[in-house]
Structure formats: structure tokens, C-alpha cells
Image 1 (tube, rainbow, N blue to C red):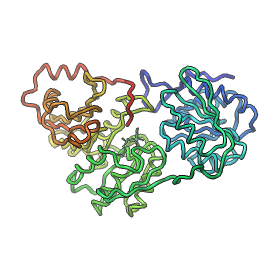
Image 2 (tube, helix red, strand yellow; image 1 turned 30 degrees about the vertical axis):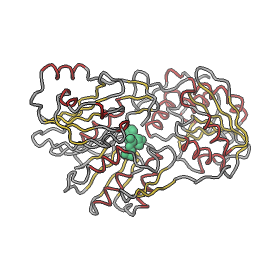
Image 3 (tube, helix red, strand yellow; image 1 turned 180 degrees about the horizontal axis):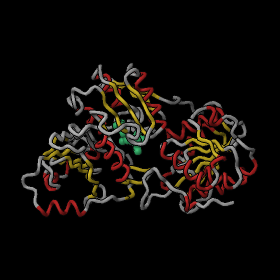
Image 4 (spheres, rainbow, N blue to C red; image 1 turned 180 degrees about the vertical axis):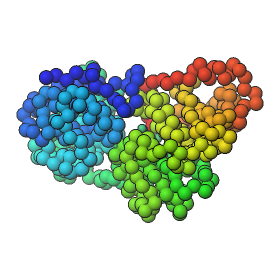
Length: 456
Ligand SMILES: C[S@@+](CC[C@H](N)C(=O)[O-])C[C@H]1O[C@@H](n2cnc3c(N)ncnc32)[C@H](O)[C@@H]1O
């Protein structure tokens, strides 16, 4: 039986134009590995970093059984389960955490190449050390996301790496002859690095946002958190990545309990280790979840968020809107949480006059496709974040007035790093807001999906 790739869905991940549940690279991986898959026994096939189940279910539909799967994102795991159910293949696949049990004794590993070389190194090392000695890895991706350095990373763990012909702008690397030791040797995963300015050690698994470093936006966000809801007994670090913000908050406020949460398993594992190494694990609880799904409305006084704008390689506003909505739902109406952008930081909304929680009304893309703007209406106050990807320093401050929103309350980086600077604009009802500027905002409020070379 052949899998109907068109019937696969991404849900509960963001769906929309340009966001597919499978692509030509998935089909090429399956075609290139078909003979090998037919030759392995039940339980000997492992699938890594399958986005929404195309690889695991494609192999299952071709006859494979006992397929072990690991996907970094909890949303991908749920999509696979739902797709498997719809395809009647639920009994063929089993999701497991990243670890020895996942790959022990495997003879064929199908891998959707991650964009992060660190992630590839961590996955290749796990397979090389624990799979069968004759294990073969068939790893593929879209050409535009591949580089020859990927061959080198696989070559550090395997004796041989073969490269397929390209098909439909996709290619496959086949690695065989696993080695138990990396050549050349390198530090293992996770890794840690101390940030002297923040006084925090950041621990990260391969592929986690900013690795063991601290992104300039994160640094700016932290700089704004000193007086954020100062009487809060607890806080949430939403989309926590390595957990650097959660660890910093817990260290800066010795009585604060922090929930750090991310949909990525690698991020959640990193955040746990970051809390541990900074001596705050007793006050930092880490969860792997989609947004704030585990938290009820109005349950946390402070939410801190440095949001993503990418879904895989696609730049898509929907992914951030989803998190903004949660960030507005979970704090009580009287003091709505905090929010950041790819370039900057935090907006603390205090909607004292509003009985309703603040609602993010949407994200719009301005005329420049590389510049996007979010805004939040909270009662009569409007909070806006300009998350320009390009040189914000070249955009005059009155841009925020043009948006109908008021004064700049923060601008990280200045001219020092124009590619990652941004600002926060907060407005009281803008004194000079005109009818036309408001209606032009409304007209252009819509989700957009665009491709971008840059990535968060
Ligand atoms: C820009 S990074 C910020 C990481 C960290 N807070 C920092 O500042 O270094 C965005 C994070 O959002 C996470 N993320 C994306 N979509 C999510 C979702 N629906 N639920 C939870 N986390 C999500 C990603 O896994 C990523 O770790």
C-alpha cells in the first residue's frame, strides 16, 4: 500500500499556505532507502526528526513494522499520531525520547536532515555509538538547506558518506560504517558556557536556539525584566529554549518559582540542565508543551516570551500569534505578561482599566517583507512590538507613530549591531493617530507566509 502524502496534516502545528506536511525530500529519502527498508526486520528501522510523519508512515505503508521514531517537537509527535491513526498505521510506529533505547540495534535510520549542524552531530553520534555495527543512515533534505559541511559532520561519525543525485531540489546522504568515537574528536552534547555578564551558565543540546550563547534579543529582554511585575511569586518563561531567561529570573529573584516551557524536547532538556547547573532546579519546573496549554487562564502574573517567527525554514507569523494569544490569556486581566520579539524584548502590559485579558489582534507585515509588526490591544492601551529583521536603526522613531502607537520604550543594541536591533513601542492612545493610519493598520492585519534566508 502506498501512503497518500497529500492526506498528511501538520495539525496541531500551524497550517497554511506554504506550510506543507511533507515534501520532495521526504519522498526521496523513502525512495533511496526502499531496498534497505525491505531487508530489515521488525524493530530495526528508526526514524529521526520526521516533521509530521511522512517518513515513518511512508516506511510503514511500504511494510515496515516496529518503527521507532523521535521528533523534537511535541507538535510533530502529535501530528504523527493523528496522521498514523487516519492512515490506519498507528500500530506500526512508536515515539521515544532521544536516547540509547531509541536507536539500540537499529540497522536502518531515516533522518530528515536538521538545519543545525550541532543537532546533526548529536544525532549522528547517538546512532553511531548505539545502533548496529552495519547500520546505515539515509539522511535527506532540501538543497537550499543543505551544505557540504553536513557531509563532514556525518563523516566524523561514519566511515563512508555517499551523496545521491538531486531530485526535485532535494538530495540524500547515505552514511555507513558507524564509529564509536568521533573523528576528529569534539566536545559531546549537551555543552555549557558561562555568560559573565548575566552570571548564568547556559547549557544546550544541539540545535537549541542560540546554543550555549545568549541571543542579543534575549539579552535585551533580560535587561527589561528587573522591574517586571516585581511582586510576582511565580513567572513563566514561554518558549524557553536553553532556559537562560528562566535561570536568570530564578537567580535574580530568590523567592520566585519559574515554569520554563518549550515544545522542543532538546530545549526542554537543555532548560532542565541549565537550571540544574545554576543551582535553581528546585524553583524552575520545565515542561515540554505547545504554548501554555498546561496553564489555565489568569493563572500566572508574569509571562516572558522571546517568540519564534519560524516554522521549520518558513518565516510565518502564525507561529508567533499562537504564543502571543497564550501570553495574553495566562496572566490575569489586571496585569498582562511580557512579550518580546526576534530583535528585542518585552512589553509588560498593564490593562488596569480592562476587565478582559489583553488580546493580540494580529501580526501584519509592513511593505518591507523583512519587517513585521505585532500589536496588542489591551483595553484602551495598545502595545506594539516592531520586530524588524533588517536595520531597524535606519527606521526613524516616528515609524511607531505611523503605526498609531506611541513612544519607544526600548531599543536594544543601538547601531552596534544593526541586523539584530529593534525597538519596543508603547502607546497611550496616540494623540495624533489619524483615522487613515488606523484603517491602514486594519487593512494590512493578516497572517503572511514568506520565505527568508535568515533564520531565528
Ligand atoms: C527565539 S527562541 C527563544 C528561546 C529562549 N527563550 C531565548 O531567548 O534564548 C523561540 C523558542 O520558541 C520555541 N517554540 C516555538 N513554537 C513553540 C510553541 N508552539 N510552543 C512552545 N515553544 C515554542 C522554539 O522551540 C524556540 O526554543
